[in-house]
Amino acid sequence: MAGASGFVFVHGAWHDHHTWDHVIRDLEARGLRGEALDLPGAGIHAKMPRSYFKRPIDREAFASEPSPNAGVTQAERTKAVAEAVRAMAERGNGKAVLVGHSLGGATVSHVAEEIPDLIAAAVYVSAFMLPTGVAPVAMIQDPVMADALVPSLFAAPPPEIGAMRIDFTSDDPAFRERIRQAYCADIGQAEFEAALAHLHCDEPAQVVAVPSPVTRERFGRVPRHYVHCTMDRAVTPAGQKKMIAMTDEAMGGTTAVHTLEASHSPFDSQPGALADILAALAQ
Image: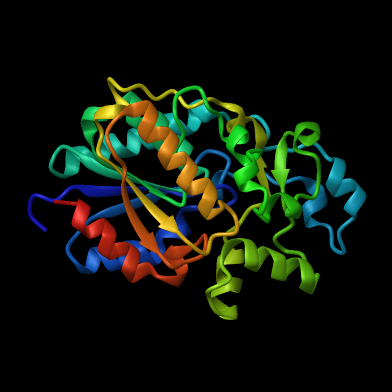
């Protein structure tokens, strides 16, 4: 599509670039360009504890082994995504649409603050979009997130091992169902199994403690959009609404909100509808 911005996609916690496969294919069929990367500490860059590979799992060892992924920083993630945005902008019309899911929204904000002039729009898909000085962990602990299921999946105390640890390869049917309810209750079993295959167990804990750096002068001039997922049980609908309201108050202006009757993973359950929203922003 001549004159359109390309897309750079940022996955959420425990995920990898495959998160966006269906959406990117849909956008490419419309003549739009998209690129997703594995963040530092994720996908091909993820490091797993030794206890994760021993089955049946030794739950005590898995709950206490320090994470080899603990050293990953937000600064590393910001740098990686900023480089991808610069490359996409150079190949296209000089700007890119930056899209983040879940915890990936924190990285979107850091990058948009760093290089606002290269970003045509910042898009948050049921993601952490936070005002200045607020860290993701503060939102995770907010009362509006009390019904979120993700913390109930943790296999170890994050401060002690340096990671938010989940056993996505567990063969416990009840536990696997809780994972499905948390992330993707609106997809079929085959799609759920395919999604599980791309999840790593240790999300570095220190990244959730980094406050949002956004300012009105830089981040505030980037058009922002929020895809509000009404069936989400990972980032609750109430939590999404609170983040939108807080950011609008702090930054001025209004976040454009697009609503999907979807779980936390609309890229799996409704990729076409999500691509419709994104394609309209590329011009």
